[in-house]
Length: 209
Image (cartoon, rainbow, N blue to C red; front, side, top):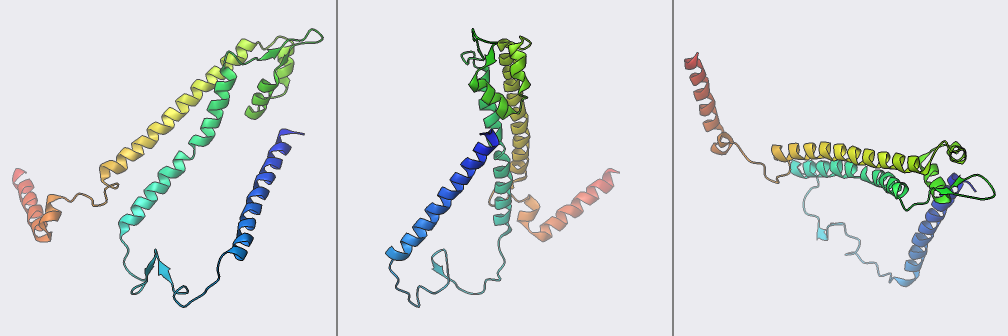
């Protein structure tokens, strides 16, 4: 059985068990829960409160801003999961205690099943086993290659996290994370004061010229 067939089998098993669990609970609830419909139960409500007025009302824009920022950073954090898988496999392969080669008195040396599985998950060619048998690839080379991949993973996640923090610092500096953004002195003083302040600045610039 190939690796792809095994993965598909696990996915089908997981999906079948999940769907069966959901259907079982739905059918079980149909027989166990009480069925007492009433006019009050049939009313439309929002968050446990009865609806009042029209639904076409002005909605605060800050809710959308916070939601969009959450979605942006939440999606970016999702990229940590595939990185963690590659990093973990690299650390496992670079472990000095991990046997790489199995010596055999009856035949040439071969890679250990664990290393073959890791190489297959990384997408490395099967011909690597023959190179180990002929002595072209030594266990030290396998460990050094895994160490190189390990440090590459650390550098990649460092750059990715730095870019993420730059974006986070930018929205923080702009005040987009504040529920009530800070106002300029002119805005707090009102429109008339803002106009007078702007006129004073224009006159000062004219005199300076």
